[in-house]
Image (cartoon, rainbow, N blue to C red):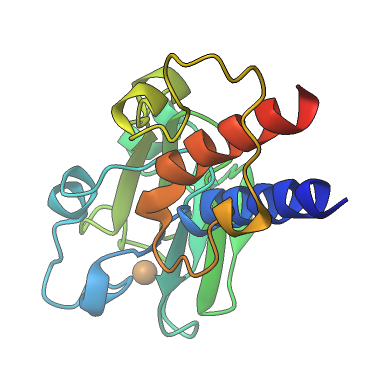
Length: 182
Ligand SMILES: [Cu+2]
């Protein structure tokens, strides 16, 4: 049972690390969502690498701006008449749950034409960086005549603070699971 508990604990850590790796991006960074100062949202977007599950946050004065999700054609033409979604609280989080382009613009007259529009492209999942488990050091013993290595619960990682260790944790979990099932 101890091994089983350790395996479950390791699995929880892996899942947690996966969730924690989803990034949150403030649109325009500290400038926010505005036309003041003519922010370059194309430059902002191209400076990021958006992945499935990431969140973009639009922060703005709702008296002067809003956020509309629009089609590619409406994005190009700054047509705010038929958005597919609208946000207007002034602090709106949008989860990027599909790959491809996500087009947003401000629906206030003239703002899109002044540059308050952003094209956020989410890379396809196959293009997302994935750490190869083979790159992580494996604690699995190689060779020897022992058929079933018996790791103890201490083999499970305890203090993990960075999602970057997910691959290592996954490798450990695989070894642990193999041992449990053996
Ligand atoms: Cu605006």
